Amino acid sequence: MAQRYGGKFSPEPPSSGTGDGSFRGARRTRAGGRVNLLFLAPLPLIWAAFTAGPVGLALNLGALGILLLAAWLTREGILAQEAYEGRKIARRPGFPRKIAASALTGLGLALAGFASGGGIVAPLIYAVLGAVLHSFAFGLDPIKDKGMEGVDLFQTDRVARAVDEAEKHLAVMTEAIRHAGDRQLEARVEQFAATARKLFRTVEEDPRDLTAARKYLSVYLMGARDATVKFADISARDRDSRAKADYTALLDDLEGNFAARTEALLRDDRVDLDIEIEVLRARLQREGIRPSTTSE
Image: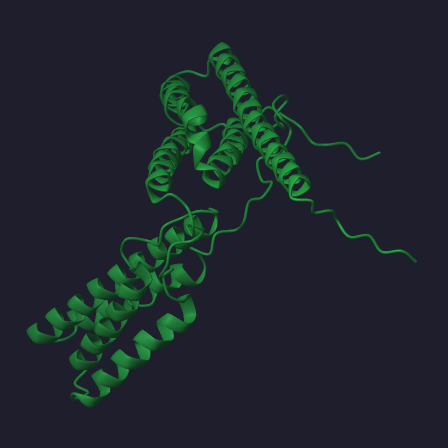
């Protein structure tokens, strides 16, 4: 019978928690692959710069910097779009990064073409083709808010700010635990983050829940962030098994509380729905309206 390999340096699955798994609902980011090629493609301009005269040097290095900036903006734009698509209620990105990246790609290619001595027509062709092909390859930024029709914008803004701050706390936790060099704890933190994000999505769907969940999105997550940073510092200096056990127990408690709060909010929403249905039925009965029945 096949047995699972295990050893001193083999990560073990989390032994406690909700058991949802850290990769449930996860999607592979699009900020890789083709985007990474954008950082590599302009590197030959370094050779062209240092084998040309002063003007060619300046033009090629300028093109290199612009194209690398375009690659970085492309990656940031894709990450912003993925965050936008992952939420039910979201504002469009404040700065159109991918659109700017398309324009910069065209400008960078134009400079590189001009440096090669192709006159003025070739650089213009490079600029147009570069901008258009970049837009087709990576798309445009979201240009409108999502899920905000008929929603109180003040409440929505409060929720968006609270969720953004909460996501920052989770990002710090994820980055800090990586420095600890413990794959098991990395997976455990990801599992906790997935549970926390369920609470985020619940609050986004009904901004009225923000009051009941505010402590979870701020105070509790801030405490979890600070505890993670301190544990990572301790673990980097000394593999303290007791500290690891205490930290894992903290994550278990936090995850259980976050899951319970999410369930409570969902239960309250179902109660509100039942009340609305009963009120509507009572009103229909008072007005003498009955559902029509068909006889066979």
